[in-house]
Length: 168
Image (cartoon, rainbow, N blue to C red):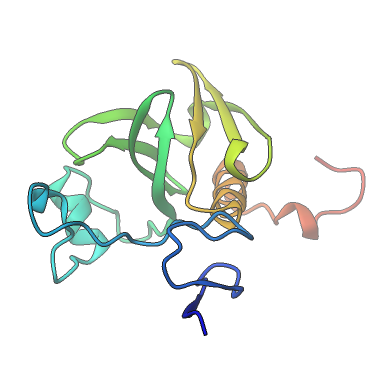
């Protein structure tokens, strides 16, 4: 009998050796060889997100909540995307460089297209436009689209699902 594991994103059973869920595209953490690339391994004890962000030069305000934080690629650079109701920041792989630092007011258009591995999100702002790709899963992409929609809503306005029909 072959060993299986459960995908944490879609709850489907996949082979224990799988690196990517065949149902939703979730990427499992891979076990790296013990030689050569030891510097890439994750630390045994993960830091809380606010501490990590402080190390990267971002301090969250008291009322600022993280709506999305995850891996993706902006144009051709891999890294981490942070979305709150106050900002949209993309950090290059090791968090040392900010390639994108926009406020929701600077974000003009959000356009999602494609499915699964080819899914992408195009953001247009005052400083140009960027394309985000290679999300951990389609669920992560959906969470990001929802977070961006919430960040672009005027403060105090209800979510689109709670507005009167015919109002924008």
